[in-house]
Amino acid sequence: MNVKRYVLDTPARAEKGRGLKVVAKRYTVGASSRNSQGLTLVFAHCIGSHKEQWEPVIERLFSLQRMKDRTRQIREAWSFDWQNHGDSAVLNHELLKDRPEGVSVCEWTPVITDFVRSPRMKGHHIVPIGHSAGTAAIMLTTKEIPPYKLAYAAMILIEPTMITRELFNAHLEDRMASMDFAVAATSARRNIWKSREAAFEYFRKRFPWGMWDERVVRVLVEHGLESLPNGEVTLKCDRKQEAVSYPDTEPHFESAMQLGRICHTVPVHLIWGTRNDLVPEFIQDSLSDASEGRIVASVTKIKKAGHMVVQEQPDVLAQTIAGILDTVKVESGVVERSKL
Image (cartoon, rainbow, N blue to C red; front, side, top):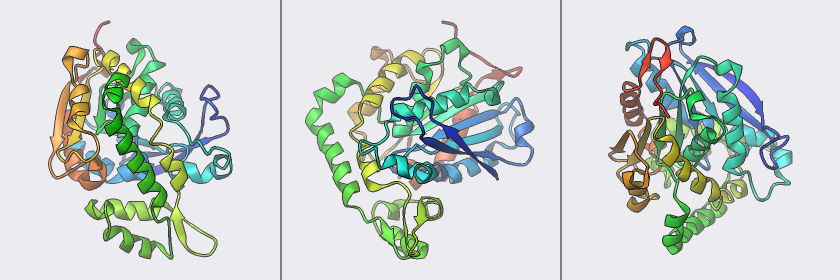
C-alpha cells in the first residue's frame, strides 16, 4: 500500500479542542485513487487504539475488492487518530497535560466531519467504518450534515458501544460496573518496556493481546509505542487519557439517537463478535430494534471473536466488510439516496 501522513486541526467549534491536532493516514494501492467510481473508506478506532490498527483490514479489503466492478473497488482509505491517541497524542503531548478530563468523542467528530465535507472529498462515495467508541464518532458526523447532502454510501458499525440514555439507566449498576472495571484495568496496566522486542514478547503472552492476530500485535508495537530518551518504549496513548475516555457516555447516548434518524436515509450495517465480552445482548438487540425506529440494513456476527474483533479476526472482518461493500448502490457515479 501507498501511505501518506496528514495533520489536521481540531475545529474551533469543538469544545475546548482548540490547538489539538489529529493525525490521519491515506492508503491507496497502485492507481486506485484514479477510480472516481470507487469507494472511499473512513476509519475510526476504539478507545486505547490508534489508526494503524486498521491496516491488516485495509490491506485485505484492497485485495478482496480489486477485481470487482469499479463501483465496488476501493478508491482510497483514510484512518484517523483520536486527539489523545496514537501519533495525535504525541503531537498534543504538552496540551494534554492541561486536559486531565481527556478528550471527548465530541471533539474528535468535528475533525472527521470537516474532512468528509472538504473539497478533497468532493465526488467521493464514502463508507465510514467505526469500531466501539469510533462508531459514535462517525455516527455523530451525520448531525452536522443534512441527510440529502451526505456522501455516505453506507455506514458500518463494528461492536458499537452506542446506547440510549434510558437503557443505560435501566441497567445502571451493570453498566457502571463494566465502566469501573475498564478504568481500573487501564490505570493499572504496564506501560513501559525496555525495547520494542520486549514489548512484543510481553503482549504475545498476556490477555487480551495474546488473543490478537500476530500482525496486529506487531502493528501495535511499531505504531502504538514511542521511544523514550533512555531507550525504553511506552504507549503513545497515556493510560490516564485512555481511562478517562470510558466514562464519557454522552456521545454514546447521542449517537444511539442519531442512529434511529439516519438509518432511514443511509444503509447502516452492524457487525458483532459472537463472544459477548463487553457489549451485552440487550444493547446489541436495542441497536437493531425496528420498533424503536432503528432499522438497520444488516446484522452480522463473526465467530471466534469478541469486542476486539478488529484485532482478533482482521481477515474475517475484512471479508465481512467486503460482502457489505458489494451491496452498496452506486450507479453512474452517484450514490443512491433514499428520499426524505
